[in-house]
Length: 473
Image (tube, rainbow, N blue to C red; front, side):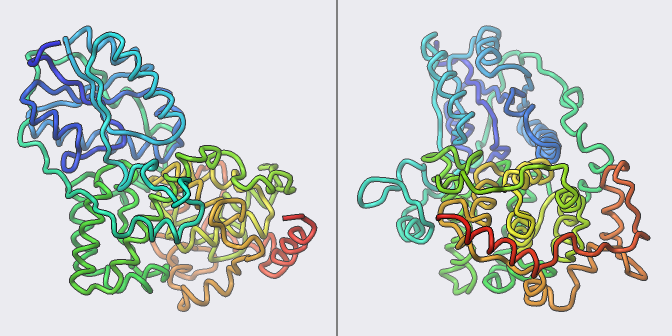
């Protein structure tokens, strides 16, 4: 390895230039920089919508790097094999990346780091996907936090480093290694006809994300505390899509929130708490990785969840035909836009896990396939929190009533009308878009009559409470 040998920067869920520690340090070194994205098993196993959105993000980031006189080299295969081949081809003396925290990525990265170090490669991993590394936040007893409120109190006054500037220059290598064509990867194939529908609602890239953040801080954050719950209003930042792929860093968001708080914007701290809820999800995923696939609370393992996805009620839920307008509207919002309002996510999840008594993993897997802002930790924590099986859970006996929730958070039924066409004399374009996005095999039509509830709000609540009373929690 020489001081002039290239640095390979392994790009993952960090499709940005600003506040990208690995690219920042590589650019400062003056050495040639080779950004690389690897389509490995982790990418191939993504659900339809997140994989499609990743493809869109990669295409945009390729153009951004091109404007800097650089490239994004695309390679497919096991990460270790791909990186070793690139080292041999380019003479690279270093491989740097930003850390990931899910169990599969940790196992992969640990093995890659050991193998590359054995061959004398300078391997470095950097922070950047989180505000606080999960192992740095401890209780006074030295353990991890299991409840959100004390976690918030432990980190809310911590210093968060100021975001790093984008590299002023990325020195290209004398010759670029060959890469694969993004179009050949067909990352959006599973979206089928839904891709163009969802595509109209995607906001790609770092520049757009920063503009979103600026607009929200200027015009939205002041009323966020109440506005975030009004599902028909544009009261949220919309940045979950960009955070999930690292098109903006949490540190950029945090410092913007702190500036807004100091300027007297009333909702800024509430929004900062949502950023820290994301941190809490990663904190728990790091310390208790079974959060992603098993009941976090041991006592819930014997609960008689329905796990049969062929049941009529489950199919109705997936197709947004439960007969409960708030639930169906929220699911249709997801199919059309790739995202779902956070308040609505709780209602949708509660209806599946409590009114229909279905295992939360059915919903977790469905969201993983349908959300463009899918995030492994947040998705798992959200489902387990609502189901009652997770850490910092809502009381298991609390069952959200989708009727009263609609009356409170969509009093004029504007959200319902926006997303449900059946029974409307003149359906909205957004409601009609649902029928363009869904599989043709569902054989649904906006002229169909709206269904009766598969399980009513009251009957579902009674059945859930009866099931809970029979268990020893």
